[in-house]
Length: 143
Image (cartoon, rainbow, N blue to C red; front, side, top):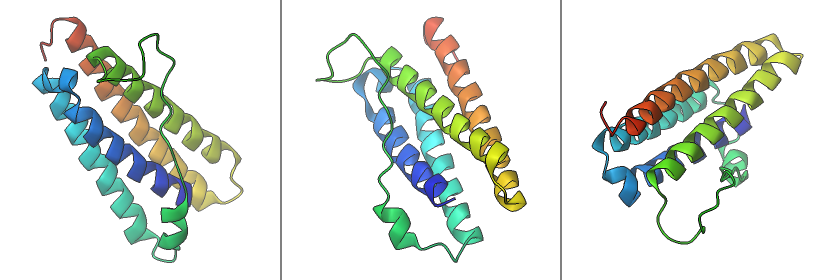
């Protein structure tokens, strides 16, 4: 669960950054979704800290969890396109969901398996929200 906390913190920071990308700010509905996901991830991180007070937060803060950038043909320099921002979010939500599903399937600890399933479900909800935003963006930014 220490890794889950680190992942939530990183996701929150990245969603805040994605919400500020110029191409995303140009589509207010998408920017709002990324801002909302940043808040949700931060709240979930706070919940983990609150529910598991015996976790060594210093160790968690030291753990480096980095969002992966999906392969894209555009150069990495400069602002992201709206499609790149959305694909980055989709890619990482899928990755986080896969990690939690793996923990749920393999942990010998029942409490950890249950918590991992809760986290996987949350990632599925986030992914669904992002998919709706992708569909709306493809329809000209209509929400």
